[in-house]
Image 1 (cartoon, rainbow, N blue to C red):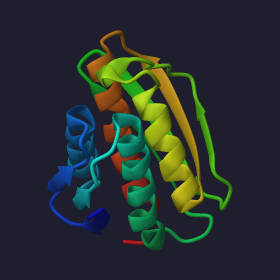
Image 2 (cartoon, one colour; image 1 turned 90 degrees about the vertical axis):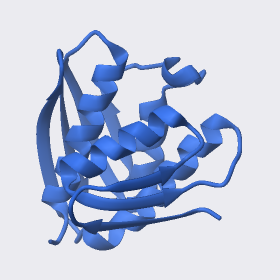
Image 3 (cartoon, rainbow, N blue to C red; image 1 turned 45 degrees about the vertical axis):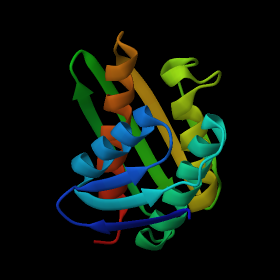
Image 4 (spheres, rainbow, N blue to C red; image 1 turned 180 degrees about the vertical axis):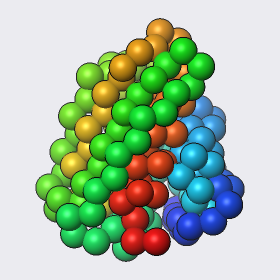
Length: 157
């Protein structure tokens, strides 16, 4: 049974998306943003699981964000450095300079798929800037950590 819950907390994650890399990244998001996150996705093909996880997180985080709320964060993960800016604009948009096609065994860009589903479900404008980074796992970690902090800063805590 699919579902998600996100609350301000200690930064713990209980995540089962069916995509182990995404599970790890959502743990990074929760820890960096100091959210307690519970998210479970019904089994499907990996790309559908990524889409579902993004949509579920968007539905869960939307009540924490007021219209016009915004947040930004720049975080590292080893040699990678990423900046994420979020705004609850009511217009789903993802603007990113990172292309991570093929990472995590998907034929598409895991981060892009996830972020687009998140933006659509929560009515977010998301800007992702990869400032530095070569190792794809580190780039993804930096993006998801920055996303967690940006969402925390935008949330009505």
